[in-house]
Image 1 (cartoon, rainbow, N blue to C red):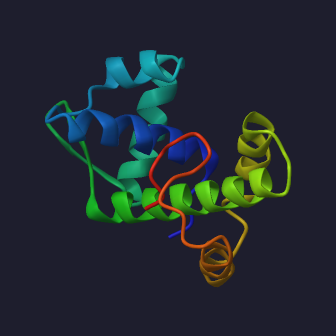
Image 2 (spheres, one colour):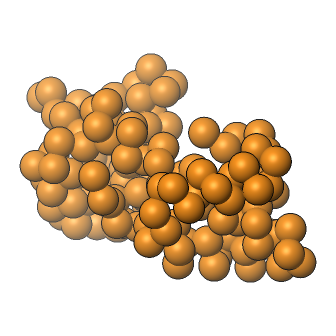
Length: 130
């Protein structure tokens, strides 16, 4: 499933909370990503409709589909970022450029780039490549 940069931001925040054993909460998510609670509410409603999150009472959880979509986007970002650093671009600039490409490059190209790079475990920032 295709996701947007905005959706990546929300899903990352929710996954981070869930991975710590905590449910996501509207007010915490809004504060963390620096949007109004009303804006966060609308985006969360959208994510739920897409099946990327589920809500139980006031608790928010990332679904398996949400995890898959987020992992795919993070993998693409980190592989592209690694390639850009390898060709001489500094890590911060590479990160910025990667955001422009991560959702547009087909999976098969990401896999070829990953193999070309020698199947690195981590991106230039030290984050694991899923």
